[in-house]
Every structure is written in structure tokens, then in C-alpha cells.
Amino acid sequence: MIYEDYYIFTPGPVKMSDEILEIGSKQTPYFRNCKFSDVTYACEKGLLEMVNAPEGSRVIFLTASGTAGMEATVMNLLSKDDNALVVNGGGFGNRFVTICDVHGVPHTDFKVKDTNLHNIEELAPKGEYTSLIVNAHETSVGHLYDLDAMGAYAKKRDLLFIVDAISMLVTDPLDMQSQNIDVVIASSQKGLALPPGLTMVILAPRALEKVQDINSLYFNFKDYLKNGERGQTPYTPAVTIMLQLEARLNQIKRRGGVGQSIKRAKDIAEYFRAEIKGLPLKEYTSYMPNAMTTLTPTDGKSAMDIVNDLEERYKVMVCPNGGAERDIIFRVSHMGDMTRAYTDVLIDALYDYYGMKRV
Image (tube, rainbow, N blue to C red; front, side, top):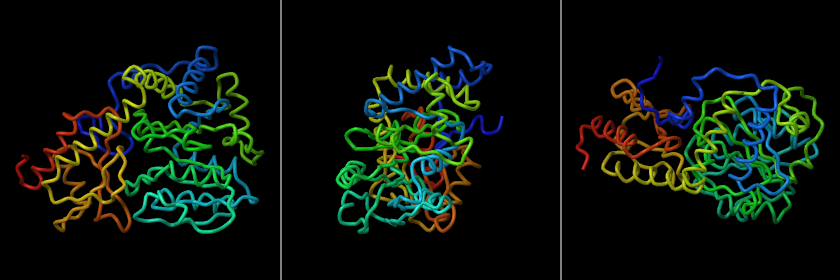
């Protein structure tokens, strides 16, 4: 099987546990029955608890990628009468800008760099906005924003606060109530450590009030909300991934809850960063999450060459960047079923690659 014996440190898909892999190896069951409705209810309940969603919140399950969740959220909650403030700190922030363009939603492209927006009050462009949109972790450069400061900013101005938490859920703190978040977008293949193909949109009551009639069949939130009352989706869900999600949420709870999972990811991230201090690599940003480390070679080597060499020579997969950052940075994930021993494989490979001895 392709890449079966490779070590994977990419920020999605990520390393999955044997328990989750075993579920994926079994026959997909029929789903239009009460038993599967119970699975959907359990997944919704577990996700709402994980993000401390306000009472009355709901979850929409889309069989689609994270970008579909981003687009569907804009389609269902915003219109030409809105004015969105969109944080654009990289490729995924720019994707939200593009989505607003495509759907004719008035917006301001809030370009940011070298800040986690703890001082958003000072940096945000002046204007009358109806919503604030952010990719909490800008995965293209490994940059984490200050959701506490952003949530306070949104609350003060009565803005609908939409957060793409796709690559920071389960590894970095997120609390819908304390951070005044109205919408959380999540995907299966990141911190939840499941196969790709399932996206979840968590809607607080304030967001539910803004769900509108739209000209779309597949992405119509009203249809999903209605079907969700009976534990179903209007169209075929990612059945096996839903079963894996139910098991994964129970696994997180057994292991001490989401707080313990965040602590575990932080430990792995700090361990990795400390162990590679002797290498000619530097951290790309001062605001990295627990989910991922972004590195820049300091010896003139191409980041893309390092990515390719690690794969070909050591069967270790890290993540390249494209465009102007192709040769400047590469990314290492700490999401999923990571351990120090597993991380040592990458660390040892890097030291061997550079012909250096690990101390």
C-alpha cells in the first residue's frame, strides 16, 4: 500500500491511533436507522462539550473538505448586506477572502503579518463591520492568533465571530463561551486524527438566528438542521468517519479530556523544538501553535529539497509550502496520535541528514 510504512508528520492527514484505524477497516453499515441516529447525536454532544458551546448550539455534519465548511458558512450566514472583516495572514486567510468575493459578500481584506492580533484593537482597520472571520491557526505558515483578544473585540462591536479551527482543535485551547465565538469550523483529518472527508460546523444560538434561505441544494444549513433533529443528514454522510469520530471523542474523554490532549500536543511540540536546537533550522514565527512547527533552513538549503530528501532517504513525510515560500519553509505536525518515540524518528533523521550528532 502507498506510504504504509512511512512516518507521517504532515498537518493533515495526521497519524491515527490503531483503535481508529481498526474501525476504518470494517464494512460500512447502513445509516438510515435509529442506531446511526444515535451515533450522530453522540458526535454532536461530544463536539459541543469539547468546545464548551453555549446551550442550544447545533452541529452540522458535511461530507466534504474543510474548505466546503468555510464556504458553506459564508453562504448561509452572510449576504450582500453584511460587511465582513477577514483576517488574511496566509493562504487560508486569503481563501476566506476569495470565498467572500465569489459570493458577493462585502468585506475588508485585513492583511496581517508578525502579530497574533493580541492588539487587534489597535491594528484592525476602522469601519462598520457585521462579522469577524479568522483561521485561528493559519496553517500555511504555522501562525496562531489570540482568540481571547479577537473574541473580546468582536463582542465589544457585536460582530458575528466566525472561527476556522480546522488545524488547532484538540491541540490548542478553544472555548466558544469564554472567547465569544459564534461559529467553529472543524475537519476530521487534523487534530481529531481521522481520515479526511468530514467537516463539522458548530453554530451557537446567535449564529443559528442568522441562518438564511440560500440558493443551494447541498450546502443548505436549514436542511441540515432540520434533518439533524432526527440524527440524520439530508444526503449520504461519511458514515465510517462518523463512527470513527464517535470513537475518537470517547477516546479523548478516556484519556482525560480535551485539556489533556492539548497538554500532550504541547509536550510533543516543546520536545521537538528543544531537540532540534542544534540544527541549522529556525522557527518561522513567534506565534506557533502546539499543532505544528514551521521551520526555515539557515544554511542556504532549499526547504523543498529537505522535504523531498526526508521522504526519499528516511521514509519520513513533512509538509512543504508552495509559491514564494516553497524554498523558505517546511512544516512539521504534532497533531494526532503522536509520542516522543515517534517524534524521535524525525529528529534522528534530521540530524543524520545534516551529518550531525544528536546530543
